Length: 255
Ligand SMILES: [Zn+2]
Ligand SMILES: [Zn+2]
Image (cartoon, rainbow, N blue to C red):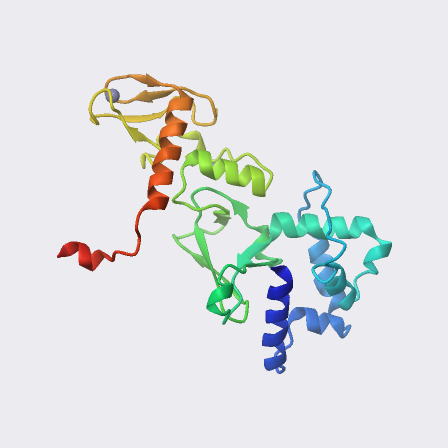
């Protein structure tokens, strides 16, 4: 998949000779140090040993060689560092003009400044990446001078357990933000279930939001549910959602 994506990008770049990308500029030696220095300052995750596919050197080794950064075979630690930086700091972007059969192809891009934004499950920004891979960070609420700028690296529509799992697996940290710590997710009850005991009068939320095995409690009748019961109900609900026939449009429902 990565090979196909790279060939697609190369084709786009050939069509668009007038606008060299940062990599092309650096390969001509004009701007290499100014790009590489901030890249080296980005956070790296060292916990893993990245397994490089030896038969696919075009994914990482060749681009690195191309821009003259290293002779990759001579410097395995640097390759690991590059993988670590990509892993923790990159954003998912879509290549413009991908044919419909290649919709699944996703690219990962590192934006040196945007990568410095900290995560919060209630972000105050959202991102847009245009067809030239230029990223724009929009404020989604008013941000006063001196306030931190946050980006949500997960989906805001996921519940706490899903978000925290995603961040743990993909970004290697356990989020303890105000939304994750609050069993009601700041009054949104995003993860809560309707209580069957009191026939839906109450909502069931975890007693301790950050504890994976915490019992859940109804806020109306006080009935307890084990984490296992809640998680299997949620998983069942998700399966049903996935199986829904989404081809029926809203307008045809109205008739
Ligand atoms: Zn959080
Ligand atoms: Zn209840």
